[in-house]
Length: 307
Image 1 (cartoon, rainbow, N blue to C red):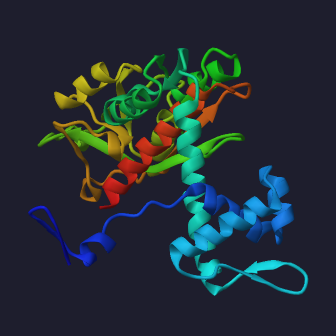
Image 2: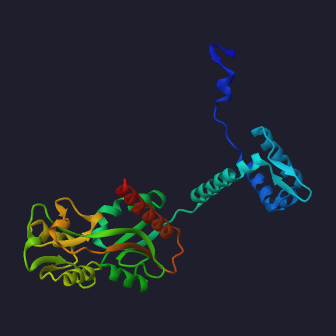
Image 3: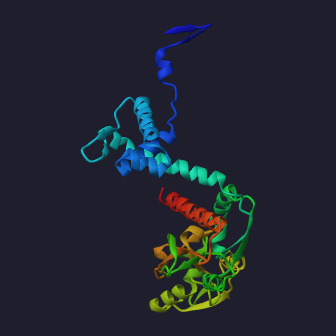
C-alpha cells in the first residue's frame, strides 16, 4: 500500500487494472508458430529475425510465461503457447475485421432488393436498421413482388438481391429460415366451416398458391375463390371480415388474425424455405452488407421464435 496525496492505492488495485495486449506482438507469435521459425516469420511480416525474436521476448515477459521452445528442426509453441495460439488468432481476426470495416471507403449509390410483401412488416425494419448502420450513404430500392417474379427479375439483372419463399432452395440460393405454412382466419370466425370453403389467395405467381390448392385437392375439400390478388392488405381485409380464410407463413400472421388449429379439420400444409439470392455479378460492399443484414435479421427472428 502507498499514499499518493490523499489517495490510498493498494498494489492489488494496480494489478487488477485492465491490461492491453499488443496485437503486433501477438501477430509475431502466431506467425512464428505457423511457420516454425524466426527467419520465416520475419520474411512473412517483412521484419528482421532479430526484431521477431525481440517481439516474442516482450510478449513472454508481459504474460510471464515461455511461449516458444526450440526443437532440433524448428520452433514450436509450449503448452502455454498452444493455449494462447487459438485465442490470439481469434483476436487478430477481429482486429483485421475492425480495421477493414473502419477503413473501407463510404459506400454510396443504390442497392435493389426484391422481397415478397408478406415478409416486409416482420423482417424489413430490422434488416434496414442493420444495413443503415454500416452503409448510411447507400439507398435501398425496395421492390415487392411474388417470389417467382423476384427470381425472374434477378435473372434479368433488374434487382441485386432477392429474398423469396420456395418449397426448395434453388441453385445458388441460401436458406435464411424454414417456416411453417399455416391456415389463418378471423378471430372467432367460421369461414373455415363453410363448404365450399371461401379462400383468398395470391395470384398465379404466388409461391403459397400451389401448395394450398394441392392440399385442398388431396383432402377433397371444395373451395371457392373470394380474391386472387397479390396485395396483402386487400387480401387480409377479406380474412379480417371473415369472408374467407387464407394461408401464410406462421411468422407473418398479423395482429387480428389467428392460426386455425388442427381441430378445424383443414389439411396440413408444407414448410416453405425463405431463401436469399444474390446477382452473380454482385461485387459491391453494399450488396454484401445488405445480404449480411438479411442473414442477421432472419437469424434473430428464428432465435426469438425458439425462445
